[in-house]
Length: 280
Ligand SMILES: O=C(O)CCC(=O)C(=O)O
Ligand SMILES: [Fe+2]
Image (tube, rainbow, N blue to C red; front, side):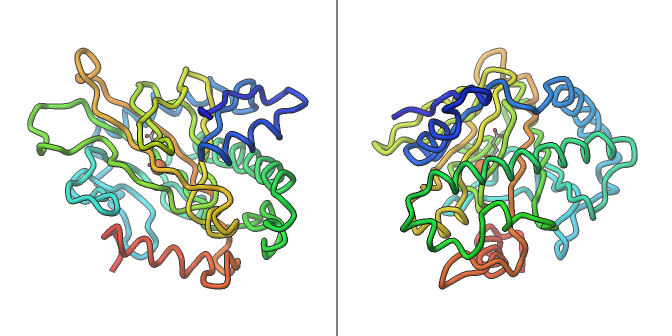
């Protein structure tokens, strides 16, 4: 099965959407409640932020993990040796946020977090009974009042030709969290790996909302929901001179939430951040 594009307002949307998640790790929504003019305004305003120098006043805090991550310290995907060609900013409601960008980005954070709870209810409702029996609490409850959900504003700069050979915008990886909610970026490049190993473009028409499964939902569902590998490939031709902005919201349970016999949110996250080289 390929990633399905599902009309959020359709009666059978929950079932179709969860089936796409189960079979591909991804699902795409149209006619969803995330306003496109808000997304476009965020892209424009954060592009200016990344183009400027003020970002250096918000250098990331290794303990709290909020703030600006420069291309020099940007992450290296698990199992890869080259850094991704990207810079990004980690937004948490409790963290540092540039004053002029704050209200808008927090509005977006709240709006998508609320939608996320609904989508987790869809996932739960369409989980087989023997799988949902293992959820330590309702999936949507796992993110209730969580301080851990992370909104990452990503900037992939135009290519200069001086990139390290073999480096790409985002090397193949799986997300760490429960679900990721990602509005289509302003430029193409996002691909998902299919079961046969082949890479496919994710349907990314401007206005689409892309949702994918992360490792924590895979862990909590004993593998029923697969956290699939995805990547962002480098542009060619005219696209090479363009920036790409994207805005994934990584849904994280509260720290004490039990994911499986082996892991809580906190123990799982620590293990993964160490692997990424962004935590001591
Ligand atoms: O930029 C994108 O489209 C995807 C980014 C991504 O997969 C990530 O940051 O985990
Ligand atoms: Fe990702």
